[in-house]
Each structure stands twice: as C-alpha cells, then as structure tokens.
Amino acid sequence: MRRRPLLTFALCLPLTRLAGAQASEPEADDAPAGLPQYKVSAAALQAAVGQRFPLRYPVPGLLNLDVQLPTLHLLPALNRLGAEMAVEAAGPALNRSHQGTLDVEFALRYEPTDRTVRAHQLRLKRLQFPTLQPGVVALLNTYAPALAEGALLEVVLHRMRPQDLTLPDGLGMQPGSITVTPEGLTIGFVPKPLS
Image (cartoon, rainbow, N blue to C red; front, side, top):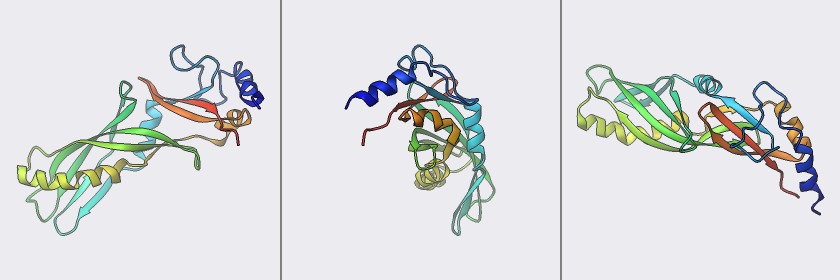
C-alpha cells in the first residue's frame, strides 16, 4: 500500500511549523519543502551541556584531572560540534597544579527511547598543558581518550518534550536527520518505516 506515505506527505505540506517555542519554518536550503523541522539554538545546547560539569577524573596515586564547563563550537561544514574544556591537573605526582585544555569534536545522534539528542563519534583533537614537561604530557595523553569519552560521549545535548513530537508522531513521522547550522541544530522529520 502506497497510501500512507502519500497521505503523510500531503498532510505535512501545510504543517511547516511545529508547535513549541523552538520549532520554526523550514528555510529554502535546509529541507524539502513542507517537511517539518525542529530547531535547537546554540545557547540551549550550551546550557544543556553545562548541567554535567565540572567533572573530576582521578588517576589513583598520581593526580586528579578536573574538567571544567566546555565551550561548544558549531562546525556546520563538518556537521559536527566542537568542545574546548579547561583542564586542571594536580596531585602527588606534580609539584603544583597545572592548567591545560582539552579539545574534541563529535557528531550527534537521536535516541528515540528518551527523545534526546546525544554526542557520539567523539574525536580527540588535543590535550595541552603548556607548563608541564613533555614526558608528563605524553603520560597524560594516554588518558586523554578516556577523559574525552567520559566527559562528552553520549552526553545529552537536548531533550525533546512529548508535545514536540505529538503532531509529527500523529502524522507517522519521526526525527531523522540532525544538521548543524551556524545558529544551532535543525532536526528534520522523516516518515516512520511501515511495519
């Protein structure tokens, strides 16, 4: 039966606006005409990630790595987000505390079980500590991938409310693509698979 996809598309044509403060009309270049979209601002993403920080990662008997609130960067050309975090290393193995930075990039995915947009496919760009000896930095870099994953992998960047999905769900649609734009994210809706 081909009626359901055609009916869904026909019903979506006049519904270029979803209910809710974050929904908006599709832009000409963003998506096929008439398909609903849901937008998330860069400020909303930053606020969501801020709920998880600061974090502490102990290296038993040696030091603690304290990770501060990341600053998110939108990378539309890569369809990814970047995050830069201040990191403080201190403990018995170091004479004093040292300030550094951790830079990562990550993609996004939608998790339907809890209606969230999450960070995944993390890429470590660099971990720098300008005041530490190169040998110590090399040792810390062995912990850097685990530090980056612990800080941001699968972090919830946005949670859609049930009412944000009521209309699309009723039309047989679900969140599909997630596109990083200069303003934030645009979540496109696609027809649900026929069962």
